[in-house]
Image (cartoon, rainbow, N blue to C red; front, side):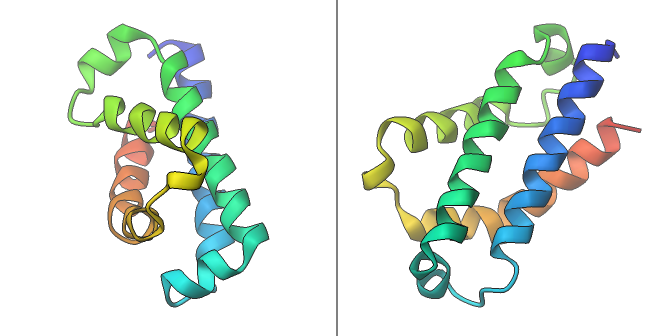
Amino acid sequence: MYKKDETILFLMLQSIDKIFEFSFEFSNVDDFVGDGKSFDATMMNFIALGETVAKLSQNFKDQNNHVEWHKIQAFRNIIAHDYFGIDEDEVWQIIKHHLPKLKIDLDNLNK
């Protein structure tokens, strides 16, 4: 693995950890969205996550195609370009159901 890809994986894991940190205290989507600071901070870290994917080498992404890199970038684009049209329930589902698996996948790649 290139050093650059290793650094990017580290940054991606940091963004995921921050998303968990900003959302862990909430038990439902309404409370989470109701706390504007936590919701906005989470959205910024989703954007950062998508931005870092774009910086990974294509070779690295091709070798690790079990990770849905394009979906991470696509979600970033939705947030960045349609912020007020975001489906808050979808964000909650991603945090609770998809992000934990992504973290495991990235942790395994970072070893």
